[in-house]
Length: 563
Image (cartoon, rainbow, N blue to C red; front, side, top):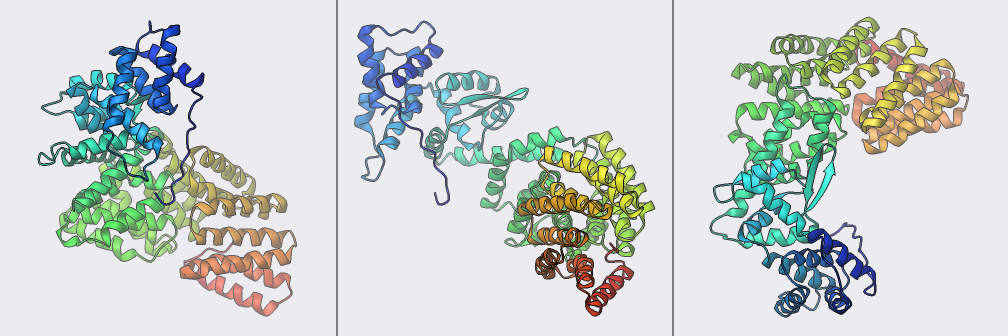
């Protein structure tokens, strides 16, 4: 595949390593297994026929439970003669592996074969609960799945791996592709492959829906457990699109909103929304599903500082009012407030109404989200008292429900409020705590934002060296985000350089910020202060005055605060 990285596992030495692996795996299948001097040549030929490939050897060794060495060798000889992949371009390694997997498949009982091919629908692994939910039906009962799965593990066709307090299973890709071909080939008229993919989609849609249930506790562990299944979720989304089930695709995407927001997957979430909203006719989609999708996409845009799609969020609000759906109304109003957060007067009525509804519904996750945007808006309105109050309430609530992402967000806005009040030491401590927490959680958004704010706070304290280090680190973190995030980082780097008296470096950073922020219109305002300071440091009072006037005008309009 284009862009695929292939790591070729070397064949083992037929003189010792291959035989040792065979004996080791054979003893796992049959503890009393041993190799006599007379058996060595036979084991050596088995390994040779498998080209010393570890996977093939493991599959063959697992068969000693039910076959003698001579039977295994005869089976391999027979399978080589029946090998169908004889195209001149097919590699010998692929032929050998295909032969060993095919041969192992013939040794399975019929129930084992059924489960084996059905497991191919999983991507990136699965747990026992998923195997039962997806693969069991009237022909393969749930109580049979564990026993059959254990047998497939014993025969090296499925790998079992510990994952915290659970066990995950997976097929090696060579084996999975073989099983998938069997699933597609088996009873095409009966539609088993389609049925399995639909059941797979439904199972992971139910899992995702748990993240989006009002009142459900969304702690870090729950979100991490869903993230483990990202490959299966992608497959579920793809199947919904492939079958034209637009409602199901949008429902799944909206349900994963906490994952998109809190685990640095905003870009993927937006890509899912765009793939459906732009490629399909929305007139046939249920109104509530369409409203959720419009609100959630707008909220994701707001989280990456894109504020030109208020109309989508307003459409969601209109749909919610028409349906008298209070939960959807809170969702849409929160999105409107988030998009409008740089203008306090515009955001205030949206967030106030959303706050009342969230309290009424007991949706504490939505409440922490609203309080975060309320604090953010208060900061941009130049109201540190209101910013502190919303931040503290949001922080207490987020910590109570285990919402680490919004706890970081509220600590960040609390630090901004402290900075505005002149409490620079506490602000620095706050930003450093957020930085450490974001790094530990692999939170790309606050890994960037915390260092951005820390750089400004350090520059205000006069610690210019540390401020430049933090700004440079925020610039590195911005590489995982968008160009305008780099623009913000260059802006604080310019501020730190000016504070250090390095006018040339400040001018270079300021120009880099201007280039990246200008495409976003109002976001360019974030860079006006550094440019004014650079001009002032150069003695260009006229240019400095022009930039300062623009900053004052932006602040007066409630769009950007003074720095």
